[in-house]
Image 1 (tube, one colour):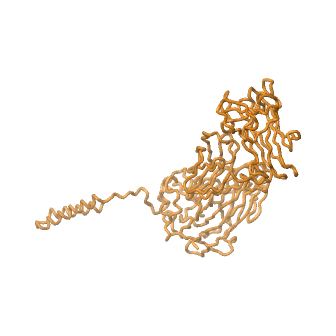
Image 2: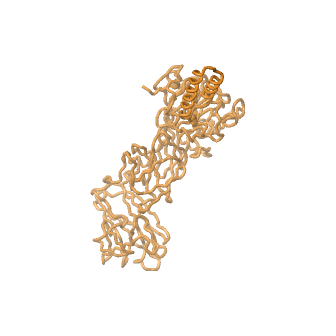
Image 3: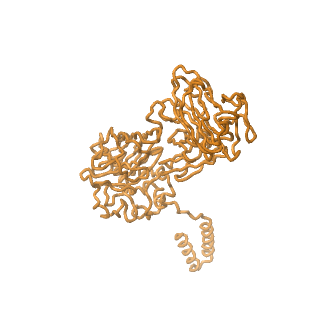
Length: 597
């Protein structure tokens, strides 16, 4: 705009001072053309352009955490218009290919996940019972409508219609929720021949079915449910074709009618010989859930599940003891998690496999001169971290197997690598959670729940490399493998990788969202360029986190990351709200791609 104004001023001056009529006309034509040209030109929008060329010039919010990705607690509630089975059922997070990343159970009408997902991928909630999916766009709260929809192009690789391996027939059980026959009245009693899957010991062969909502009783799932006794004291039962020697998980919901009702669950080869398994005791305000495992004896070709009334409020056993949503599922290892939801079907100690991050890898890029400023190329130490996490049927941690790749060592200093284990919120854990550690790491004797991967990255690597564009380069960076076995009762954790000086262990460099360890030299805080929290007074960091499904290309030595990645500045100055995949669009002339081969 300044150039445009200058040109117009010069032409105007020549017109006013030139005495030649011909020249005046020529200059007037030039002036008119210039006005037309510049007025038609589109004003450039600089809102997403890089303005600064140095990190030192950035203005960044003091609460920015210098981390990419969708991170935090995700709480899912449900809109369930068809009243499909929900409570204690399983729900997963899957990727675009349908691969299962994380599974949990619905409890109290909600599902809770602790997620760390990359912004450069697509991830969905998946509810196997209905096949419903919903895209995840953030942590926090979201609602899922159960109505059986798949996004365009998604591959559904999980099926609930597989033939059960623990049965000797195609349909081991049917009509567990008494949805057939549809009665279209408030209640009725049907002959057992008209109720698929169910039989009764009643001499009149009648089975009583209610419609959801009658007398204020809402079905636990679906639109119908049953009463154990219709006109007399009797038992309801199903005869199942379960594989002898197999283990199954059974579950059923029970509710009182006029008050507290009591019934028993029995299992065996016949109704007469069925053995007691559980007592169900519930009032008339909500449904109670009962579940257990049963191993079918060898030689038992038919297995009978029996539900028999013990007592009913009001004194008449023929009135009361509602049941609904009876399920039988294969459970090969007997851990209480059905095979179609069990990620380790032959290991009774492990039910669920998840990952850290939930998908992809965690890249950590450090400047190592803290508390003094460095050159902001963030290649002094670059690590890629992935972990496979195993949990038992109670969603308690069993183990975590880590793979930490040392992708770049642009530092002139010798640095070590440490790890702290914090809780799911990133806070210190008071008790020791590590039962055993194996592989390329040792316990940190000075820090409870601390681990040392190496005291010196240069000593750890087989061939000295830097991968920073000026030193030696390798496309096979050294990788450290180790496994943590956890003490009982731990449900979640957050791993924090940090670096420290090899010759001065207490001189640590952390990301700003974590504190120093117990042996950190606290006197280094608020010295040189540090503002007391591993950030400068302008909130610039010494370490940052990138969650990605791809690879991070390290900036060339002494090329600031703001110049190596054109979208970085807007990401930083917007507090991460914009350009949240800046790391996939580098200036290729200013980065090192060690994974290009």
